[in-house]
Length: 183
Image (cartoon, rainbow, N blue to C red; front, side, top):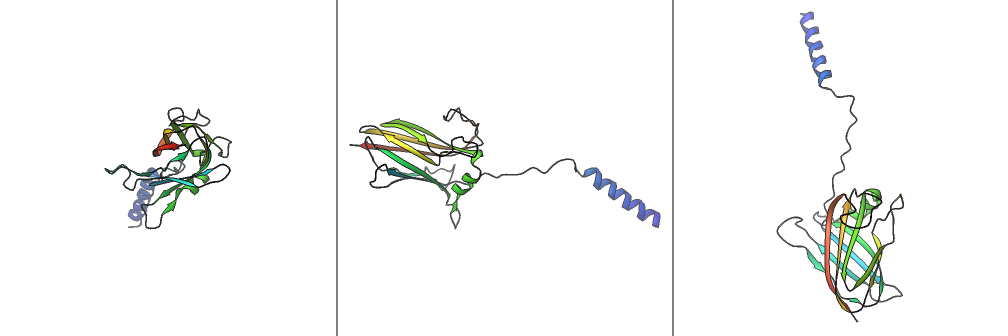
């Protein structure tokens, strides 16, 4: 009887050890965040009314388009911009901006402009000195239609040329704003 128990324990141990994979280090799983909302605060250089752009997409890739608000901007003006990124699909909204700051080397916001916008210049950087994009300046031209598209990239190639295609990585969120630059 002792021999059978011993052989049983020995066989169980051998099976367990054969299935064990002690040589592999555990893979760190960094789940992507759920992002529903981007708020952009634009403050005119030298003072003036603060303007807020918002893009809210509560159903993600669902059938409903994002709800976008983009008030008019003044012509020939430089705006200081900041971005807040949220997950508002939870009962308690989660501020994803803090996670992006903590994982700054794994994220980058990419800007594309059109129409009556002169430039967007990123003014913050990650721990390696590469552009992050949560802070920026935006310069308008004279009156006309304008567009501002912002992409949040995860694990972009850094450094890069600041374009959507040239930054690599995976696009986590897109916000598209069409508005008027007024005199």
